[in-house]
Amino acid sequence: MTRLIVAAGGGGDAVAAAMLHAALYGDEDRAVILAYAWDRLLIDPLPGPRGADSFTGLEPVTQSVWSVPAEAQPVAPAGSTLPRLAAEFPHTLALLDPHHGAEGITRQLEELVSHLAPASIDLLDVGGDILAHGDEPTLKSPLADALTLAACCQVNAPIRLLVAGPGLDGEISPDDLCPLLGTLVHTFTAEDVESIGSILEWHPSEATAMLAATARGARGICEVRDAGLPVPLTDEGPTVHAVDLDDAVSRNSLARAIMTTATLDEAEAYSREICGFSEIDYERNKAAWLTERPPTKLDPDDVLSRLDQFQSEARTRGVTHTTFRHLTEALNLSNSHRDALRQLLISSRPEQYAAPLWRIPSED
Image 1 (cartoon, rainbow, N blue to C red):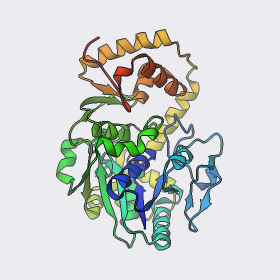
Image 2 (cartoon, rainbow, N blue to C red):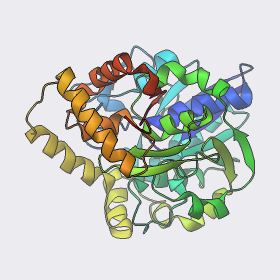
Image 3 (cartoon, one colour):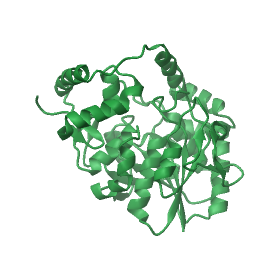
């Protein structure tokens, strides 16, 4: 038996999809997880998502769909977490390619449904920004979710929209999301997290990291992203809710506008018009800034001293946790230092590692 799970956003949603499958369906079947190759600049220095022509070693599934095996490689200078995920997943990882707009994704989905005859189809979004109108001031990444939503609502097959970790992406507040959520489908537990535990040790997703941390019992305020956005870690954090797909489309102005787009550029233009920005423009600007940033060195004593100062200031903001991505930027280190920073902190202060987050002690 095969199930199809569409990861609405980037790689973090694909990781959450694997955890969801293990929690809901166990080992009696396998999933095809359709996911973007759209990683943070830490992983992929090129802005925007990658298409099939950005990889070697992909395997054809249908005319428009390619699977990403562990042996696949992104074509330099591109980077991608998908091959490494494929090596750790018991499922088939397929490439969701938005370069032909919502029409292209719709075609991919229709071909997969015809080819697989899946027992179920889930569209999974971690955080819930797929339910945004498009004009929210806290919205940061509407385009990826809007493209998958626009495509899914045009497929002639029953698709269930699921929102995991309402509010954990920091884009729509939990209070605004609560009235929109439907039936509680599942509440993740620490046992559920074990299915993706090894992936969380290296994958850069912040929203899925917080989803896993709340399932393990973390509560408080987590500071994330380069801007230090505070995200509440509450009892609602590890929950998964069903949401009516038609209601989501009715709310999402960008999804409605891009349904007939045939290129990513066309969809991006609608994002600028409706939301006032495109997240790919943000990535372009940040990529240019990173290339001009002089390289820094990681000096352990200096890093730990600056960590103490950061934690002291964070406590005044009520912060109890942070991500390693945010720590890397807050300590003025380059993205290339993230893994080394993680190892340094875990080895020197293991009691503060609230996997996969970093816990801010209440006092020095």
